[in-house]
Amino acid sequence: MFCYTYNKSMVIKMRTNKSNKYKLRPQDIKKNSASEVGHVITKIKTEELKMTVIWVSIIFIFLCSFLYVAFSSIQKRELNDTVRNGPLLVRYGKTDMGIADIVTIVGEVGISDDSGLKRKPYTFSITNKSINDVRYQIILEDDSEMIEIDECEESLFSKDKVRFSLDNGEVKSLDSVYNNKAYVLTEGVLSKNSSKKYKLRVWIDENEVDVNKHYHGKFIVKPLK
Picture (cartoon, one colour):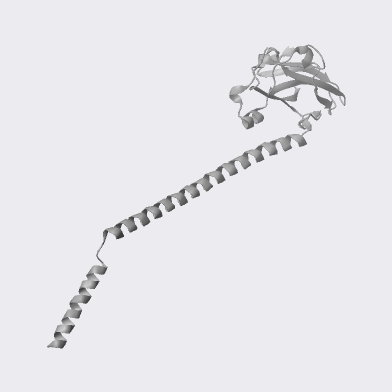
């Protein structure tokens, strides 16, 4: 009888202890809540760090790609100082930028015609490699490639503000030589196996004061039929 009572009491005590072990106490709730909040905050910070790294990587890749395209374009132009266009061989002189056949005016205000005529010229020569006389045009057209790279389509100088002189001749505005959808600087004729050199100066009209505008052009020599 004694043994039975003792065993029964032990069972009741063990059940009571087991029940108390799994009873949720207020202090446990507070401790668990703080732990969960801390875990959530840590998780959020980790996700924010991941997103930051991803966006920084995307921006870095974009900048590298942009610089590569710009540099490749310039390098391509630097190597292209001699061009064959039909019967004509055109050799462009080097400029301070190392680019042969393009005209770039960025971050400049307008200057007087007297000052413009003193600017360093763009030089090039034309040689007729055929056995016949060849008529040709010298054209200054928009350099769409550089305009796209600079993203300056909305901030270009108007053509009436772009001034030029060929071989120290008459000063003209670019819009005044617009003919048949092209800005034709001059026309000429080369006899067979002959050559001619040119000096082209380009500047912005003295009444233009906006330094945020650009001009990007390239001059080409086009044989005429």
